[in-house]
Amino acid sequence: MTVRTRVAPSPSGDPHVGTAYVALFNLAFAKSQGGRFVLRIEDTDRARSSEASEERILAALRWAGIEWDEGPDVGGPHAPYRQSERLPIYRRHAQELLEAGGAFRCFCSEERIDALRPSQLERGQMPGYDGHCLGLDPDDAAERAASGEPHVVRLRVPVEGACSVQDRLRGVIETPWRQVNMQVLLKRDGFPTYHLAAAVDDHLMGITHVLRGDEWLSSMPKAQLIHECFGWELPEHAHLPLLRDAQRRKLSKRRNPTGLDYFRAAGYLPEALLNYLALMGWSMPDERELFSLEELIAAFDLDRVSTGGPVFDMEKLNWLNGQHMRRLSPAAFVERVERWGINRERLGRLAPLVQPRAERLSDVVPLADYLLGERAALKADAFAHKALSTEDCRRILHHALRALQSEAQWESAALMASMKPLAAAMELKLRDFLFPLFVAIAGRAAALPLFDSMAFLGADLTRARLRSALDALGGVSNKAAKRLDAEFDALPLAGRSAAPAS
Ligand code: GLU
Image 1 (cartoon, rainbow, N blue to C red):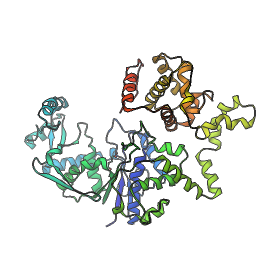
Image 2 (image 1 turned 90 degrees about the vertical axis):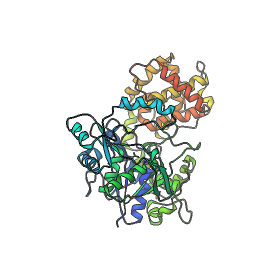
Image 3 (image 1 turned 60 degrees about the horizontal axis):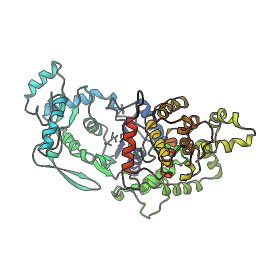
Image 4 (image 1 turned 30 degrees about the horizontal axis):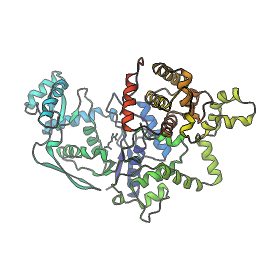
């Protein structure tokens, strides 16, 4: 048997470090077994998926040093590898499940199902679909469907007993069937849900092992049931522990740098990042911490993957990155520095900002130091201002982060168009409003134009600096964050598109 693994990102946001982590383990395991590693794009959620996100995810994974044998951009024997291009396959399989009795048509409206909620909660039941259409005669239901009546296809879940699934790292896990919902498999729009599409694709693409984040553990009973209905063998599953922050919370983009683009822009070496991610769920038999991807592959053993929640520790990553820097020859080092950011293209982008303000060529570096490299560490007194209290500075930084959270066009004019109305809504003079932002971005109140600087740095570094400025001001407790979020949500901002706090 050839081992085949996959990573299956949904292209609905920024490239996430967790995707590289899961991809790395799948890659290392497949390659350690002489197998193949597949990249599949799970874009069946039409409202949330975008081509731009897919492109960025592929580019970021490649930057990180993850290479796949089969995928939407490189093709392969099981193409297409983008789920939105495989719709007839899922429809055909949904039909087969209906015929085999593993699924049923449901004509209930969402309103009907929502209306069940209060009484279910009152009775202490799990809210959700109540099986109203389970008893419909399949032929009648097929006729209603053929006449165009809107409906979904749901998984038929046993009512009694328990399901037992096997996880390679965690052993057997039992779940009472009544805790498993009658999952929608095919939506009204004819698109499959994740559960149907992933099961069908894992089978058709010959996936033998599924390594993924442990947030997916609870979906295993459904995957197993779907495989059983088709008479397919379930791939072996191993759920990797989720990455956590120092407070042991799931890494969240609101609180931590989670974007792969952040790590690239902040000057991490991809091999160091992969080394670090490997250490999050794995240790070398000889406990050596510094290793390359090839060394990982040579030593990889799935049974050595640990299930303890690994804490993402920037200090440790910095140390490891330094170690990998020292491994480079001087020529390779120079080449990396250039590729990273000190190059003609980036100097060209700096020229319009720096040229009008420099008297000598030697002014270039001091003017642009915070754009070419990390800005100086901040202390709270950097935010001392005659018209603003510490709390005002905190509020400005928090609200700016919220407003920028969903900024799609990361360029100077768009950033200005998002920040100016925010200052007005907060009833602050623009100059005062910009002060803590300048300090956060540049480390000082007088610097190159703010919005150009933010555009140059990019979204990930900008957000990371705003967050670290908030930390320098003492951080924001959960309680304070709730209050600030509520304040932000109540601001009179026209056409607001800021994502809700999550
Ligand atoms: N598309 C899912 C995700 O975004 C993949 C889950 C899986 O690997 O089964 O994480």
